[in-house]
Length: 567
Image (cartoon, rainbow, N blue to C red; front, side):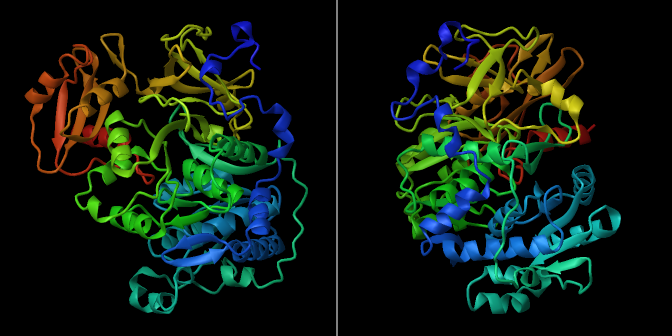
């Protein structure tokens, strides 16, 4: 237990779910094996059940297990072992799952890449991470950029997977012809390793010994608290611990029976843990799309009847506002976990009313594998709260200026987190690691407060604070107020330069289709909801959706870049 808290009690003890035990130290040996152990267990327990469905083609756990072992043996035969960095630059498809667990078996370090990265971003991450191999597909949207990296960076070889083999018969045969403009012809040379050749073996592979607490299985790149991309080093123990914490939280899920939607990308740590690793641990069937498309998503929910659907708020919001939603049966959904961005109360309310499922907000970061907190599934859920710490996780609040521990409810402080899921540090950045780690705690850069029941409420990112005449203004509080207007579909608030006040808030707003309002209307609406100093100096109303990241989060960065470009 955390001895730094008076009385040896945590502020969340009184509200912890009855069926979930916080102190799991005595269970530690059950959930600290190598990352691939969970996957192998599901292969053994559920060999004939479906593990993965992609564009109407399915693979059983037994089939996936065979492919993982054969790829692991093929990779090892080409020198991929402990210490070697291998990139995954793949859309959501069965290849990602195969490559991910095969690499874990070799002892190599996986480096996640966003397939939509520009060439400069790819080159920077390849050099920084020391990536020597990259696994990708033969699609023109992705492959040509990586082929250039063979000549411009240290990248040595590309392992190329044929996208046509993701598709069911006869689409797999027709794809290279019907979609020939989308498929690349891959050179036959020593810089390219065909996936099919790597799996031409018997799959008899003995993994190396893994030191789960120290062997790094993943570099997850993040801007962190400084905005500079750096690789969070996550060990086997970090990732297996976090998925086990989630399993304990979702204690009534039926192992080997449930289905889980995968529309957010596996290369993002949120989907990697709450979908890929969670499914592998519990034997769930993953129903995947290469990217989020609202109609395709609803059709798959209607057809395949999944129970679990982790996503970001913008996706739930898009479903709420989809004009043909009534055509689809989404009643199979039981639990949805929202992460990656604040969940507006109105989005949560409307989604739960529409689907009848429980939508809970969670919280985490790349540096924490990522999940730290979630609202209870069978206890009190507080709208606007990120919930309670997961089992084995200690959360403290500290004054950002003095570092002093915050011990009273409704007093703000920076979240410091400690637990088995907290990273080993930043790759090759000891100084940056030292800035964010103290006595085993990770300083998140997020400002929060807790209430009388021990529920945590995020106020904002420290780096997103707007200094208006020296006063701290939190964009999230303004966004929450704007979202209360029934005409608002999407909203982002950020600070812009102001000659008189230094900085001032600006709001970008997308209204629901067919609705109108102007700046005067919005100012009038907000007058009794935020202070004068918090009132945005500018409102920009848009008819098109606001820009989003690959995972579907509203992109404050893109909006500020557009603002800067206007001079």
